[in-house]
Image 1: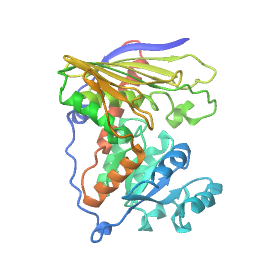
Image 2 (image 1 turned 90 degrees about the vertical axis):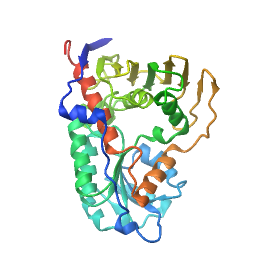
Image 3 (image 1 turned 90 degrees about the horizontal axis):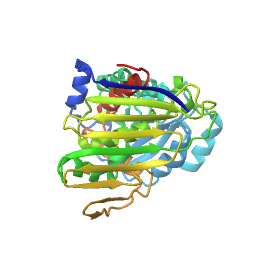
Length: 363
């Protein structure tokens, strides 16, 4: 086993980090001109037709009530006819990466959902914003915090909304642990432990390529990080991190495993892990007067939870449908997003620090 690095680093409280950690004043959006008057369904175009779009987002859009699948953007011509026939998408709502910018002239499409490799998130979010379209961008938001700032600025300059694809924040079990932690229902949160990982045996996937934004931390790691942040409702002030590679024949450019610890202003300690090495899917929270947990905590369906007072009982929802419907409703009503671009930025500020720490013996 290769152990790449271990280090400990306190966050530098420069202006950018302090602003992100303290929270943002979100803009107030009026109802867009093309949505005023009689309420309409909000058209979403999926950019990138890989597994997540094909198996999850497109089917979820058949269950939504406020949003609908209006268009697609793909670099694979053979997929066009398949999607057009399956979902009744007109030819005029089908785009490729070369003619993407002409989407500005299409009133059927209100939201562009960027479902591309991480290295392409910034480009297509900015291009969509410049085309006057609202944006949902999959997580992680970008390659680093600097790119996140550019994306947020572009959306604000064009008067469009930006939301990040943190589906769990729309899910009732997750919302319950957010309430229990942030409202201190069991007293102060003492420790958060979370693991988000799966056994990845693929050898030629973009997630194994550094330039495309690969690596375990940039994939499953965001779930563990998000859990610690949304349970505490705080931003970390200290981080420890170390990375591992157990199969160097596959993981030549990126980490296979990342273990990271966070310290929050209230004193909460978070012990978090992620990787492509094993199947992990749990969140456990210890408090002064009790505990609560979810297992699994970031599965697409079947989230389960309990506390020291008993089992949680909430409906098992389609997370993606709930997410897209709420985003669409926010656009119709001109309301701020539950998960705005600033939320993705806050994660990436921490991710940048985690990688920095894991790469150095001393910080």
